[in-house]
Length: 449
Image 1: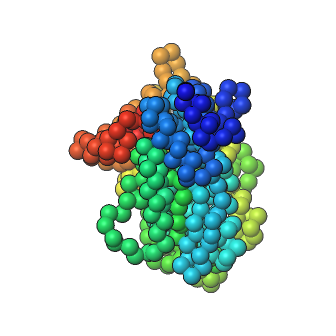
Image 2 (image 1 turned 90 degrees about the vertical axis):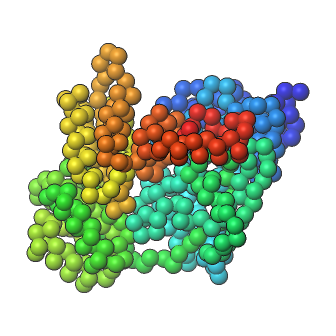
């Protein structure tokens, strides 16, 4: 029997899609770089079916690309020629919300927004939050160790996980659905799989840590004249607004492009930097904080959102949907020490525009957690490609000791540059782990290492 026949017999007719039964969504993530259609798509409905599918694939030596919500930007979910796809889109649902332990158990294919809503119904708060919350899936969030806008207060996705259930390449189920904050019984195995991008095992279920709701959130927008003052504002906010939830900096090119496209105006004139702050501090504390920053010349202007509508307008500029319409847009997600981000942005912009003088180059990012994003749009000449942009962005980054990935993972697109952020010894250990857990190399080949 062929692999397809055995999978169909074991999982049922509706679990496999072939040929015209699936559209282009399974070809590429949001990077748009995927080109190869998978042989077929396997859609398991529970952990047991994931185990069966991987056991059979491993037996046949069939390579498997694992897919979630397809919202990534690093090509990590793009199948290579000859791959089959293991899609977790049917493996969804909130199993329970445990108020006493402030945890929730969920299946990997559950959209992040569904998990947030289930926690809120029980009076609790799931801290992980991304712009793609409606379509990204928990399994993918954990597999890439997603960040988002709450990292400065609650940490990365890794910090929101207490337990995991994972299926290894040979079908072995590792179930450690721990619900306790303290558990030092041996190796913390879940950390092997969080951030491994499906190369070491497939996450099928998770226990997520919940928090008390942060309370009413006030959104502020501050105009700042230099990056040095952006950093000083961050430190002042962490001291004066101890309930700081978000700190998002936007360089002028990024802010002005999106604000103009959205026909939104906030200040009378343009400023080199605009920073969004969110806090649950009371109104008097916030007004006193902003007043002091103005008096000290730390900020040039400030605005407090007086309604949810105004807060959403401010955030719409940060989310930057208009900029996505630029031709040949490339998005980069990097991190480096906070004090070096401003200088890196200047050097990187100069290098890119020396090669492409008419290019759009803009920066924005969380900054408070050392993360900055770069948008580059340009037209390529003969013999040029996106890899020429990659070479400049990452080579400059390497000279500052930064990381080529802050929160989007390595996938396929950043794999050639991983050596800029990891030593030879670290890479060798990664390969040893891969060999130990997936000796036939069937899981997400060509990704990460």
